[in-house]
Length: 386
Ligand code: SDX
Image (cartoon, rainbow, N blue to C red):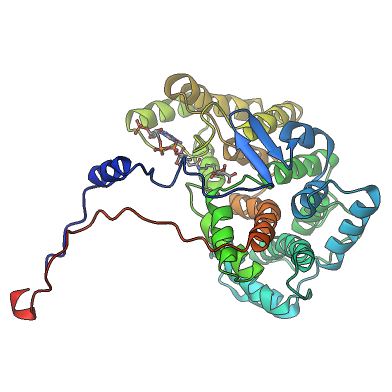
């Protein structure tokens, strides 16, 4: 049976260009008060990301995104108490975390268990303030889900939450079972701040579309997790480390990137749909990574990092996005690769929730149009003529 041949890709894009549409990027799909992303910089609710990275912790960014303002000392203490209140996972969820086959992708485990967690939501109501409290519950729970699953996969039992730890410290404690050193906690906290929000990226937009139908917050977050998993989006930090891990010397990396550029391969951790002259977040994290690599005696890793980065920038004009420095940062902190994108989730859940709340308040259904490029009108043939 010969189905109608699809219009060839270049024709599709040509037709769309003629109609004045671009294929899903460069199109303004809505307004937001949460962040601004552009060549000039990245701001969360008006605050420059570099200043935030220097002065606040992830919990303060969580409060800023979800409540709209940086917290006072009292509000920060209350937020930390609330995170602590919500860290313990319901027993049925822990049982499922234990039972899912150990070779299951952790992003798939998160997609499943966040959905299951929704049946044990301890918060109530659907006002924006109720959704804010649910956002804090999801942020606390997702960190615990990741840590508990990591321990099960390593034949260890999950650990009870430790009072008095900051969110990044708690995450590392629940992963490793020991209070983390200051440097590790600070680097994790920095990645949580930098990954937290990025306006209408694919996973956030997914969450907004789901919220725009008046569906619920948990459904929106589960959808966003599915979107973030893709290697063109959140999954790139894992692919970038898999790429780096194959090199023993900077020369190996230089030979690899020469071949990759000749083949026009997509190099994971590079490029960005909005940033054309470099990702502001990547520059911030790369500076911290270089400092850490120096004290950690990881000069060879930085030489391999630069053997990939330099030709990408100088020959292709394509800069690292946040995933490239983040991959090596997590590696130097001895985190296993399968945790990298889930840690992106642990951070971006703050931005996703802020956008869901904003969308709920806007209460407008998303229904974009498409440019039809298929078969022209034609009569239905009888079976005998097919
Ligand atoms: C994230 O939107 C967000 O804000 C996302 C994010 C967030 O915080 O939410 O920032 C997180 O998703 C970051 C991106 C992570 N993905 C990757 O690192 C995967 C590798 N990157 C590419 O797939 C790509 O850069 C994209 C998809 C991220 C962006 O693509 P572009 O630049 O908009 O457009 P394109 O894919 O059409 O590429 C244009 C040209 C092509 O070359 P030509 O065919 O014109 O010769 O640039 C080349 C591409 O081949 N190119 C790359 C490249 N990225 C673009 N070449 C090699 N390696 C790359 N990474």
